[in-house]
Image 1 (cartoon, protein in one colour):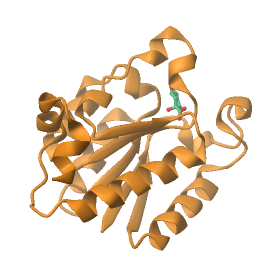
Image 2 (tube, rainbow, N blue to C red):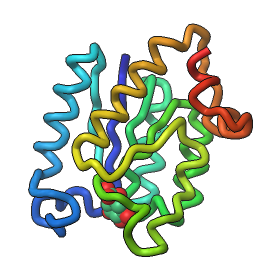
Image 3 (cartoon, protein in one colour):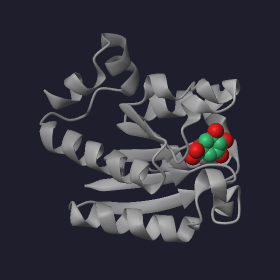
Image 4 (cartoon, rainbow, N blue to C red):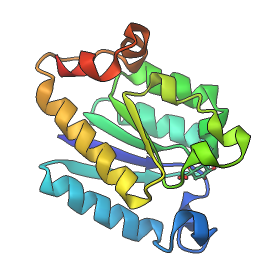
Length: 168
Ligand code: DQA
């Protein structure tokens, strides 16, 4: 199983950026731990980061055949990027939105996610553990989905029962 771990804007500064919110770990350290976690569950990781919306879209497009699943921290784009939302919906790869911090308990603008409705799930507020849990959910979804291609996250969302549909 192949998993794309995609990090968005400002996450390249992890370790030096607002460490009270995001922790002391650098992005390289985080990627190393997430990769090791995925490997223990039999999955291979490709990690990418970009500060640019267009580049993130290009990365999603170019990995749509390679990736069986995606762990995506869209950073602040989470809260307003319809272009990223459309990209996630378009590529038909199960995606979990992740955040290090608890976006539901910060400024009001962070409580909105335009990405979440097209994802298979969401993990936030647990730092590195948010990424681990996303990997675990995606590995489990992959094991339980016998038919390919997977339904698009948008279709799953439309049913109102995201995880159930993947699991059948
Ligand atoms: C973040 C939360 C976002 O609101 C913020 O813009 C980030 C990081 C997180 O991982 O907690 O850049 O995605």
